[in-house]
Image 1 (cartoon, one colour):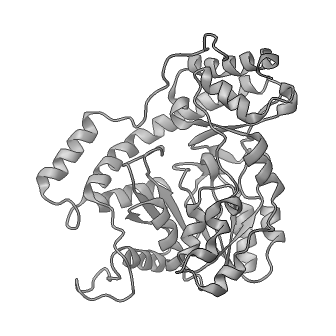
Image 2 (tube, rainbow, N blue to C red):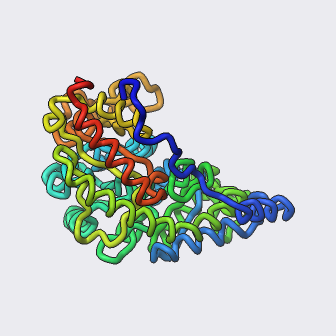
Image 3 (spheres, rainbow, N blue to C red):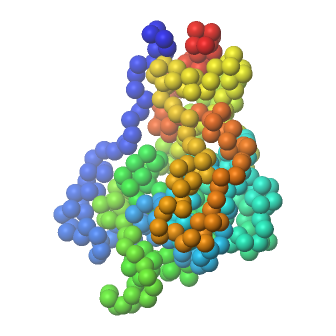
Length: 402
């Protein structure tokens, strides 16, 4: 900080983590000659990942975005209808809807958890909405009991965006098992990764078969190879990805345990610092995936030090961190939809977000949120102490930064 000796020079645990098991799994696929269709790993991963989440069926696809898009199509959400979702999420939550000719309708978040606010969700329903995509942000489950209750009363399809929430639990029940369908991601930064990849989960056999057909060129499971029944696409996961994920899935429970222990330790210590408030972990969250560890920063408690300067200083002290998302409705991609030729003009008119204002979302994005990465939580308690020491050092020297 300002040229002084940083709190930390040592690297946090690197990501991804792998060893000879992944190498052997890849070698076995390579030597089998079955790198895609005809192999066994994809089907095995679908079964094991679904079982892990207490769900009957899985369809492994190329990425989490495809998982969301295919879920909406399989659910039969009518074109032109609105989909409720938070604006505090990765853009794929919304773009998957747009690619299905649906209209994202943004809802504010709970200021303590950054997950979609069920009360705000219910108050925003006007009758044009046909689906809701709750996002288990950072690995923290949204309040699925309230959300599914509201959805049931209003005839809404529920597609869980669990792209950051492998193994997370609400009331002892794993996410991905509450909605009609759910989507997970295995992109490079994710807690279980194959570089890219995703999966759709569902308990509904009919939805499973539709999702399978959409991801496999519109074929039916027992149909002829060149007999296509719906205008599907090719979003199949490769055997190489599935082989890596089968090994990664074995690592997940222990790594999740460590992340939860380190997060609890870090929360206890950071909570003692005036101006630092870790996001709330609701009582009903019985397991948190902690893809991210997020705390809220209060610049007034740091003498008016802007969050951006705080984040810059924390990075300089050897603690990798970032401010995270911007509200989706503020991004250029969602301000310039009229320039995209494939979006029907009548839908573009419904997607004018110029007047959308979600105060909790904007406060999180522009003033409060500070993100730490999931691999930092795989470090030791001493590593967590370094994070705390860096924050304390910044606070003690805030006049110098100002």
